[in-house]
Image (cartoon, rainbow, N blue to C red; front, top):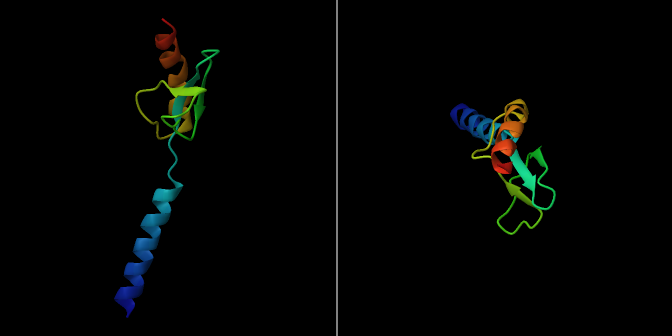
Length: 76
C-alpha cells in the first residue's frame, strides 16, 4: 500500500513540475516589425505575429537578452 501511495505522489509531482515549466518565444508583429517576448508560441494560422527566434527560451531573461539580436537580424 505504501509503495502505491509513494508512486502516485512521484507521478503527481512530475506532472505538476512539467505543467509549471514555462517557455518564452521571440515574436514579431508582421505589420510593424516590432518584436516582443511571449509565453505562447504563435500558431501556424496566426495572422498578426510570427515566431522569429529559432528556439523557445527557458527563462524570460534569456529571451529578453536575445530579442534585440534576433530582431536586428530579421530587419536586415
